[in-house]
Image 1 (cartoon, rainbow over the protein chains, first blue to last red):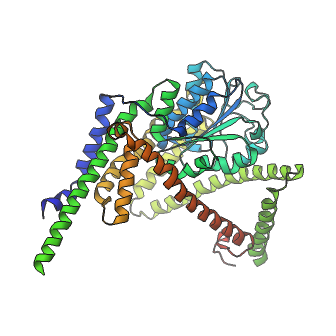
Image 2: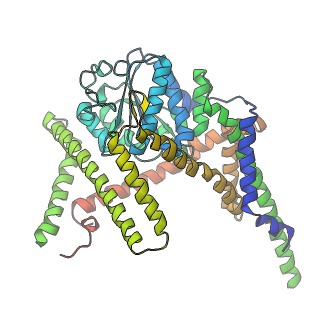
Image 3: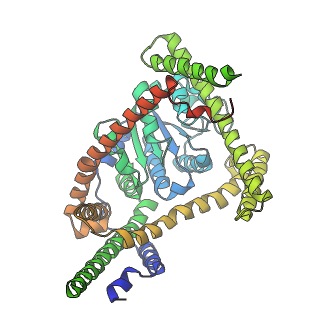
Length: 281
Length: 216
């Protein structure tokens, strides 16, 4: 077996080690390279930033703990921004396994901002039906969620004053890790009930949502950890996403180097094989 | 019996399908009221679907344990985990926290489900790197184009990449906004047309696999 062949069949544990080290070292010794703000993330930021005080902002945390590393920092940054702008926040989730996580995110940021449950914000929790919940909220929010996550009746809550259905929502953002998520909020929500919609998603999902973004079906998109880091930079509160960007930089570069090395060995091996074939004939 | 098993579900599907498709274009209050009622039904059916799914899961794994099939120990773990979580969840009224204080159900959620799911997602990075090393080779012109595009996007999506190759940010943005968006849009149009065609087939009873393959 030639050297090139041996290198192409390298033990995958070596690759795991390289990736592990590339993740660990930047977390221990952060560099803090500047983060460029994309127009996609700025779209969401600008819209929330220009919301008048008291506007109704709906945040749907449509993810479970598997997507926590990417979507948790997005949710924290958006909620911090919304609370800072004194808009009324309605939070909810379409993913049953994400209810506890969503609750902790909302309560944590609300506490941090000194906001009162029921007056400044409400966490509606989860309701069965998937995408049908969006339609149901669009018809009547109180039949979809007669009570909030804590069991308090939603009807009569000061935070929901003047809100009957999704038509009364000024801006909605879905942070989705799959289905139901951003796409469902457009198809069953924005298209029929005419509110402005923004999106957030995991890095791997982002390319799939660009058609919605380019056609104006969503007005902005926060993609993965990078998007969260951009949002944290925009609100001037650097958190977990900015801290993780160095690690992501290093792992991306490590993968690029690994792919380059693999191709060098692949072409070396192919050249050797062709030479042997020529010599044989 | 055949009428109840076959004709009646087909009739319900056709009537409901046609009425709800038409409802979208009728903004009359009665039509809106119909949608409100139907969406409430959908939510209730969704709740039952969840119960059905869990029951089915229990049945599948119970059979595995009974027959001592390969990996039956995992099924036992699943039973223990599910039953334990259901008991703790019912005990706490399904709440992870009450007035800001974590419940035992919240503890199970925060200290088992969250780290387990997080770990599963995190190890993806390691497998992606390993798979990229083994299979991301410029074997053909098309593969080379894909490889170059991937490298540009990977560079352009991280600060270090933009620092080393400043143009990668703009190039990556162009690839995502122009090339990727147009191809995705074409796929979406194709999928949507397929969905419309399938919906018609279901509404008019051409596609009947959803009725199941039971005896008539």
